[in-house]
Each structure stands twice: as structure tokens, then as C-alpha cells.
Image 1 (cartoon, rainbow, N blue to C red):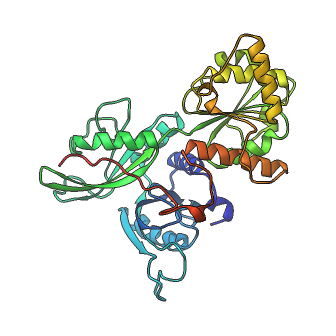
Image 2: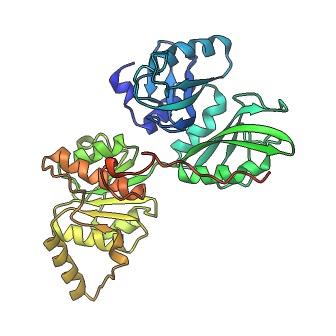
Image 3: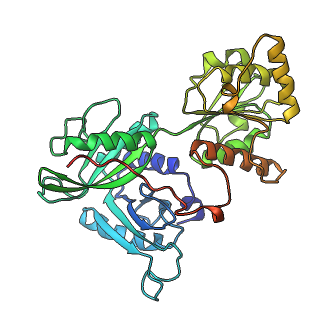
Length: 385
């Protein structure tokens, strides 16, 4: 597989799965379903493997991908899912203890890509949260490995891939499935349902986080590019109709030309929307920020020095508009983390890094000072037994 195929965003992996479902190939989907210890990726990470020996996506830093390509041939030949365990904790010179550095045990589910996965990618493409439930083990044999059900938060029950009720699946799985769907996290649960031992992988696919960038200058390009690579759904909003936004910002998912006064009317902004204001026009910025402060967005990044924003606040005050500390808590100006860089891409990195920190509820600091695991462990309440 190529470097470009390995490093694609997770959203692109799901888009590629959607595309491949429309074809007649015999693709195999590899998904991390459990991790013990440390690993490069967490449960839910995916890789799509095609018949030509190419893979799209990454589940490790590259140490297992070649083996997975070979294992996919077995899955493709027999047409049945396989659950593989890779022990990367052994420092001795055995098959997997070759200094790969993960220091963890990784369980990977390989399964033929079939129509049973279509509801997942369609919900994701439509911007709807969904939980994908995949059976790993069932003591009663009612479910075979790879059997699948879905939970849509707008519904009240588990359903089959065909949208029908799923009686073979315990109802108590609905609550943790809804929790993981909303959070966009994944976990493997072992439950005892009336004496029936069931192991289920629940993959929560949350709708992509929206990033709206106000501005049409060339410095918007690097921010758009990096945000898209970090799985944001990026919309670029311009206030000058003479600029061809779609051509200038090919990495944007959507573009819109409007006026600052119409922002709240033309955009559906909510608590899952993150915004960046970088028009470099003081009046446009002020009108935009005013509307964003009246919305429920959790992040408003404003380009410019402190003095510029102080002038903006003074003009708000002259107009009878005041904002208390709580109202201003979502506003970050000057925008970005203090990384010390000054080139367009360095500035873009600091902006996107700050947005990621806010979105993931993290206080930016060096990982060397972090105690415990680098990645947060998923905690989900198991169904009552």
C-alpha cells in the first residue's frame, strides 16, 4: 500500500467503503475491536483491503499491514470473518516482538465487505450518528461471528441491516450503543443475558464534527487542508462573491457565499459546530463574531491580536452590546496554540491543534508530562446482568 493510502482520514476510509459497496469486488474490512496496553490506534480504527493487495486506512503505524493483507486472502477465500490477535508486548525476537514499539495486544476483526455494512456508511454520509454492533462470540450460537445489528439514536430499538427489529440481540445493548454512537467511540462488551454469554463489538460512528471557516484569503487554504485531514467536515464561507471558493479551496466539503449579517440565517450552527473567523476585514469579523456569540457553538477562533479584539468589544459597548465572561468563554483570540511558528502552514497547524484540543476536551501540554495512557480509555456502562 502507498503512503497516501495509509494516511487518509477516517472519513475517507468510510467514503471508500461506501464506494466499494457499489462495485463487485471482494474487499475485506479490518477493524480493531480491542486493545490491551498501548497501541498506535484505538478500537474502531479501520483498514479496507482490496483484491489487488492495496489497503486504504491504517490500524497500526505500519507494522501489521502487510500481514493483514495476507490474512485478508484467507477471509476472501472462505468468505467468513476471522478474529486475529497480535501480541506486541513481547520484547523477545519472536514473530511480533520485533521492536515495533506498541507494547500492546491488538484484536483485529477481518470480514468480507457486504451489504450488511451499508447502513453504517449511509448514516455517516448523511451526518447521522449510528452504532454498529458486530457479534464476536455467542454461547448459544444464535448469532455467528460477523452478524450485525444497528442502533440509531433517533430510534428506540436495535435493528437488523434491513431495518427490521433484531430479536436475536439483547435489548440491554441499546443504551451502551447509544452512548458510543453519540461519542463516536468504540468498545467490546461481554454480557451475560439470562445465562447467555455474548461478546459484542460496538462501533460508534458519530457524524463528522463541523468546522466553518469565515474568510476567502489564501491563508484559509492550509487551515482547510489540515482540518479536512483531521476528519472535520469543512465549510468555507466567503463574503465576496467575486471569489470562486470551490476552486480556491478544493479540500472544503462545502462552500457558501453570503453576507456577515446573514450568517445565522444561512448556516445551521449548533454545539457540534466549530468556527474560525479570518476575513481580515474588521467590520466583517465584528458582525460575524457578534452572531456567533449569540449561538451555541463551543469554539470561535478569531484571527488577530488582543488589541484588535479590545477595539471590537469597545464598539459592541458603544452599541449597547455587552458580553460577560461566560458568553466570551467560547471565543479564542488570538487564535491558535503557542507553537512558535509563523509560516502559513505553521499557523494553520496551531489553529487546527487548538480546535482539536477544545473538541477533545484536552488542555494542551507535552505528552511527556501526561500520566497514564496517551489515549483516553473508553468507559461505557455495561448492561445489567
